[in-house]
Image (tube, rainbow, N blue to C red; front, side, top):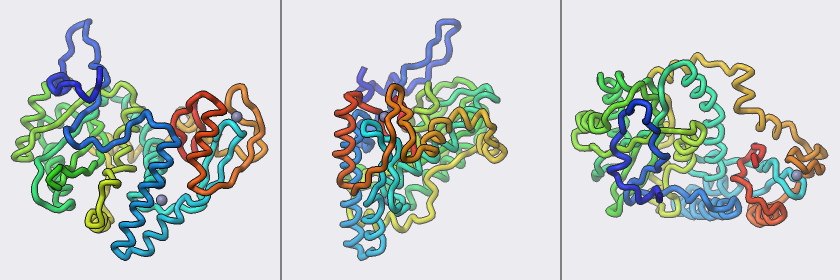
Length: 352
Ligand SMILES: [Zn+2]
Ligand SMILES: [Zn+2]
């Protein structure tokens, strides 16, 4: 079934459990009509690397238009020279010379979202072990109005705060995480929505939640909810908006100016009992092993080590290259292995 053409009737009704024969709903993607801004996950890592270069080039042009010379130079330097640890067939690490840390930088965004995943996944697992709750991906949207991005975000966050104070919410959710995604509709009005991983205590009719959302927003009732089958994938889907909160290639200088005004805005957070749980949570050795084993392995690898890829063992060496050479390098490695690898993430051992 094509997830994008799934009728809303199917995803908007949260089916209550039916004794013994209840099965979880199939993993469905939420389609927010006209706001599809996220990349097709089937692209190769080489294509994604090329797109990141294009995005950064576009950002630099906009920054220069706004006379934000320092910002443009930082983006230019970010990941411009790379040190790649490889055996000649597999890539284990890509270390950049410099990172700009600009919020819209696609390279820095990937690293940030990776960090969030590593931080929150063990806490989510711990929370699920302790409480009888089920994770769901909830998207809250609001009507489009003529307002600034700041006003749009404030309106949405205020409504979510009100929602959390209501009995219905407290009865059905035990906290979770939120992140923001920004888009614009075809009329140029801001369309901001919240992606929430909610820990649901029990099933409810989605129409009841719709009524609650309408009650706190006054005019918005569009929301989507789907159960999360795989927590790591669910978290990845939600934090990708932290690394790519909007489609920058459709972005103009005015958008960048407005975005620069949002300097201190938080894009990700926790709420409810999960928030308290995170404050007290300390990574035990076991939890660390659960998420960090492969990563720490990659961190320990240096030039001369044997490639840890199964059936390889060739010595690793460092290759220095410019950012423009990376996409081709990915292509070459993929040709050699003839085994398309999942997305490589900076600082990560590549899982096959
Ligand atoms: Zn290898
Ligand atoms: Zn950067």
